[in-house]
Amino acid sequence: MKITFLRTIAKKIKEWGRKFSVLTARDGNPMTDELPPYSNCLNCGTELNGMYCHKCGQNASVVNPGRRDFVKEYIFNILPVERVVLPTFCTLVFHPGRLPKEYCAGRYVSYMHPLKLNLLILLILITLFSLMGTDAKIKRTIDKSTEQEQLISEMSLSAISDDDDYLEKMTMSPRDTVTLAVSNVVLEKHPGVVEVVDVVSLTDEEHPDTLVAVVPTVLIDDRLLVQKDGVYAFSCDNDIVSIDAMSLAEIEKSLLLLFTKFVDHFPLLMLLTAPFLVLALNTILRRRKLPKGNLYVFSFYYLAFVDFVLAVLYVAGMIFGFSLGSVSVLLRIILFIYLTAAMKNCYGIVSWFKSALAALFVNILYVVMCFSSLLIVSVVVLLIMLMPLM
Image 1 (tube, helix red, strand yellow):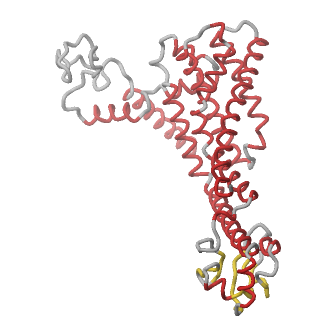
Image 2: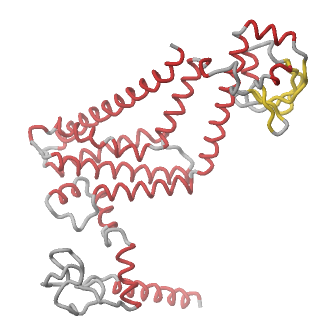
């Protein structure tokens, strides 16, 4: 009985596959297999010599399509670039260098445009990040808010400790017992400002603790301490504390957050590094005098492969419990071998040794230019953040 049931399901799947293949078969007109029902294009009026207008490209479809015709055209419009996705991915992965070679030779209808391919893979990566990276995003958000809270506490206490007049005013102020959310690490760096009575809830030393503490009421009056949901916390929204109190350690934290954002948007930023890869290829292959368009096509297809490998490793990491950082060496080896094979097949380099040597120098130049740009951006950001302290 089970065998009969499985055979029935197999027949149904086979029948659906046959119907789908018939539905998506583009023998002549995509809307109908009949001859054009008219002799002139309905869009521009040009005389038709076939199923497509040679002037505007519109197909000779029926004027009022039926249900079958509408569904058929719907499938052609919803599938990206008309059933070329799978062949493009297979060629990209299993035949390094063939896509740019075919594209630059004029055979580009059978494959996806390199930019469209990159955008499709980016869409897949964004979907994976949103569906599978929720816990990681929550953890990053919590860590970021914790760092900001500790930063504010550090700034407020630093401003108080550096102001002798305010310290004297605080000494003369009445005291009040409050529930305070602040890291014990911060309090240890600035003793005497807050007297801890009891620890209500203790987490690790990096995160804020909820403490029962005795504080001068002047801190509350001057809004250095603000109350939210029954718990007091330090604030920098006052006349005493300003952003000028930011220390170099806090600037390092800000740069670390900037670097984290860079890593989060790495696949998207990879597209912006295409000119660097083009420049590296042009430097190594300058004797061949290749057109820049050829190099851009090669670069975008290569970057598409990089993003594809990142997507595969990301999914594998979520399933088997490893991070991308733990397989970074493997990732570099895969990309180096792929670039070597791609340059050999696309540009006809004679030997594997020469191709590997060219790929090595291209990688070195590309990485140096990327990190130089990142360093310049970091220095500019650092100078902007240091301007208030100068």
